[in-house]
Amino acid sequence: MTIDKIKDISLVEYLTDLGYQSHKKIGSNYWFLSPLHKEENPSFKVNSSTNLWYDFALARGGNIINLVQLLNPDMTMHQVLVALSNYSETNQSPQQSYQPFTHQNISHKDDTKIDCVKPISNCYLLAYIYSRNINVMVALKYCQEVHYTLTSGKSYYGIAFLNMCGGMEVRNKYVKRCIGGKDISLILQTNGQQTMECCVFEGFFDFLAYETARLQHDELLTMPLPMDCIILNSVSNVMKALEVLNGYDIIHCYLDNDAAGRKATEKLKVALNREVRDQSLRYFEYNDVNDYLSKHSK
Image (cartoon, rainbow, N blue to C red; front, top):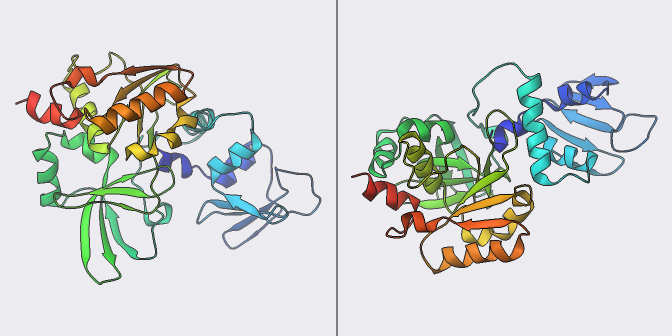
């Protein structure tokens, strides 16, 4: 389950399931007695349109992930995400495992106007996916097509992949950029169960290549069982991944076969009190996982 799917869990329904009842409703705003402290007059507002909360007594707010973190301070970020994933699977009606993200749950900088987000259909983007030997169904499952305009007035489009802070990595044949904040991405198993091991990738095309190789039953590259995946989106995000990675027993690093990739793997080995395995030997003759898929499968 992706972060955008977790963020889409209704806060109103979640609080109701916890035993909290809204005291009044004004437009799309629901008012609750705060679950974060004792009070007699409701100061906790949930906007059902944005699916965000704000506690006026504490002067703080956020999304459902932030709320569950505050309600369960002893839980790691990974445990929070797994708990919400389990809640979604158990309490919500059946639907696609990976929902398209919308304008409302994409954060972006002021210099970028998002014109449209939709399933990938642009022939040039599809051709780019094919050129990198990615299974198109894999790309359609995890990515979207975004069209955006800069303050200069020039418009562009690309393949979009959401990260944990609500920003997105954007790629096409010519451009590689991030709209919104730079952060890691996390893909949880669709059944909501915590896997004890996870895979770490540098970029989302490496992740897509790995998933394509799994479909091809490539045992030289992939793990025998499906597991959660973390995409750094940049080796500079290694330290941001530590809190989530602490929830796993074994970490499999599928980072680039270059100095930066090897350094990032070593950082994880030093920083984590976990077993970190360097899986780059599986594609030692290639630059990265996508390079392996592009050349090895020909």
